[in-house]
Amino acid sequence: MKLILLGAPGAGKGTQAELISEKYNIPTISTGNIIRAALKEGTEMGLKAKEYTERGELVPDEVVIGIIEERLELPDCKNGFILDGFPRTIPQAEALDKMGITVDAALSIEVDDSEIVKRMSGRRVCHKCGASFHTEFKKPKKDGICDACGDELIIRKDDEAQTVLNRLQVFHEQTEPLKSYYEAQGRLIEVEGQDKVSDTTALVMAALSKI
Ligand code: AMP
Image 1 (cartoon, rainbow, N blue to C red):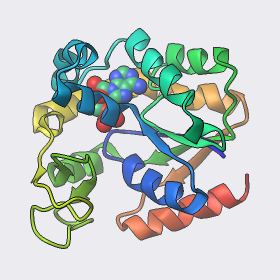
Image 2: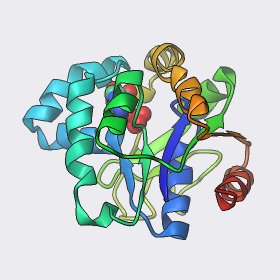
Image 3: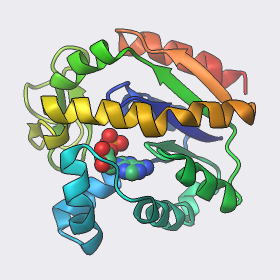
């Protein structure tokens, strides 16, 4: 299965990607996580990306396209993969097509802006491994501590209020047009994001079982 997850920042792509990844035994490739790791390590790519991510803007296409090209060549992608956060612009989608990659579906998780703002304020991520939690909807077993690796949970800098509004605007302007792009290819699936993670998962799994 080759799958793209679309949806606003905070729609639950990362959470659903983890669950799909377990069920179908395919890796999740999150450009956001790759960029954050590079930022933390202080690599050249990380330094280039820093100013964009902190403002809630998109990193230039050529940077993320390069990241994806390299990542998809690794052997764990040969049976399929989930792309979480890529493509985010039409040129990125076209680059994927040019790489000769045809996805089975682009699954869009639909959530209203007002709900996104509410959700993002409660989002916490692991400082070390990037796992994602929520103070209300996906509580860690121990407050402020990552279930996966035991490190500290923090608020991402780009989850701060003003940055969230910027990211939503960027989403509507640059990423939402991808829905029409994949609809025209007959590959778009839309799922209404629910309040409860497990309810969204049920809808997602039902949709995926049909492709
Ligand atoms: P995410 O964790 O997917 O919300 O990504 C966090 C940030 O990383 C975004 O706000 C962008 O600045 C950057 N980023 C991640 N994926 C992409 C992409 N495909 N194209 C451009 N920028 C990206």
